[in-house]
Length: 165
Ligand code: S3P
Image (cartoon, rainbow, N blue to C red; front, side, top):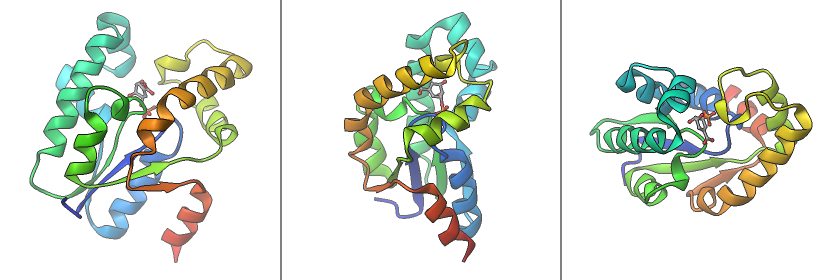
């Protein structure tokens, strides 16, 4: 395992990018957002990929981008997309490549973060009740994958405080 590769997993809106950037700064590592890597390679935004190519093709692109990132020799902090650990053998590969951390704040906190975001096709067009129901369903399906991470953090506020010390 490469201790200089830190890979954050968890639900959309769980704070992977926010925390990832802060951790990368403290540790003086580069920060990458897997969705951005996919967008650059595909030459389209995530919503465009979903709309024009469909989710199945998105998962293939995600798989390819993840493999590429996990196989680079240098260290970094990587925020993965919420679904990335849950398809193919991605979680196993993530754990073999670096230190994985599952960000697991309460779903209510996630819901608030999602309500400020326009860029998530999985939750587009849903009111807050439908969003919470979908979040609960997806969380139930994905938790077994996320739980395979080396660490689980369930209080993002505490982590931010630790980083501020
Ligand atoms: C997805 C989460 C998104 C993005 C895509 C699919 C998912 O990333 O990869 O919209 O399946 O949960 P974030 O977790 O950064 O929102």
